[in-house]
Image 1 (cartoon, helix red, strand yellow):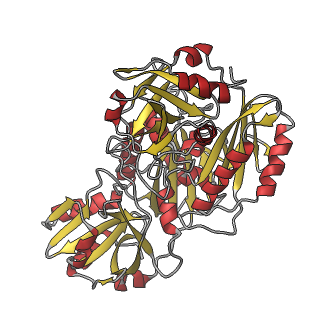
Image 2 (image 1 turned 180 degrees about the vertical axis):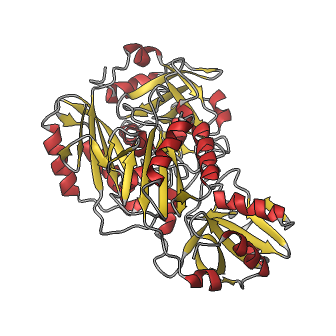
Image 3 (image 1 turned 135 degrees about the vertical axis):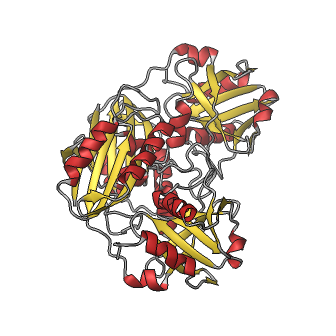
Length: 269
Length: 269
């Protein structure tokens, strides 16, 4: 692994960083392939919108320069970028003059077994709920304790965990977005109150639009798991994966999955 | 300021620390007076209960040793202790064998003007909501973005901001707990779904019990601000402060405040 802080290769960060104290920042986890970062524009756009929501000032040129410098040293793998509000003294108050901190972490690519793509994955139905807050919903911020708690609900018997809000609406996986197929329609969950709007989620919605596949973005109560035909998970690292089972519900792989997989999973496994 | 990581004096932390990546940890902010940490037992008990909830393993003896070593170097001021789940590779999965990280930060005491205690403070009614999650409620974890956002809603015109949940129940201040006085009864908000159970909050409830003051811990809808006689805020640094105004509601200082202030604010200003 290799890491950089504000463009300098180092493994050390200031203990005064607000990322540590408050989770005061955002992040992106990206796939690097053939020396370039896949869907960088989309990731950076989301990062910027997160910074805007939190009122963190970043210089896009500085981030781009850092990316170019780092990318030159990599071939394939996973690149994580964390941007925090930077260092501060005690207290929540924001000093707009303090520069943001950028932290880049590069690691080997995760190998997803081919059978995950061809046979599907098993999903734990988590007890841990995702909280609702319109001020934080959608952005990929550093307050991720709910995913950490949910991830402790299983070991190796599942490949992902599904999380609901306190009203029993399906929101997302701990590290992925949720898609259901019902008839010919691709449904994904509404994330205006909870959850992370994934770059791959948006990419799938765009592709569905291009290919004339009807889509719905709406509340999806847990009880609807019984009525849907197929389920898929998406993220930027694995693309899309079909789901074989969620708790007592079993699903088979749908033709629409194969169509979308051919569009987004190329080169992934 | 002085800082220590795992007992060593340093200002640097690993970029792999899960405190940074996920806010995966808890903290305490404590008052140091005459070379000892005020209400250390209560703070450490809450820290331990937070660690237990998050399933973070800490060695109480190690923390105590670190405190003793650090305390010897201090007279008065503010001591913050952060405990995180330690370093990890990519992903939410928890490795129970990785040791926790302890971070101590010492800073000068904040000077609270005497008029805050004698005339009261003005409180902003924040738009930013506190989210509801029984898995996180009560403990003082590092996912504090809601307080960071709320703190951006005012500058110097207020001394604190009051936050509600999405149903309009009063929960807490950005850095304090909320108390109302109605008749002869001391009321504080129910924190089973949101908020931080403050050490000073519990201390006040205990004192009220000792002194025969009726107490209620319950939901407190925002509309009730109109019906209450007095308001106070509590935290470990300032003790209790009377509130003069919250948005359009004006309050005067109640005899019960003076009684409690005599019990907990001694030596604070």
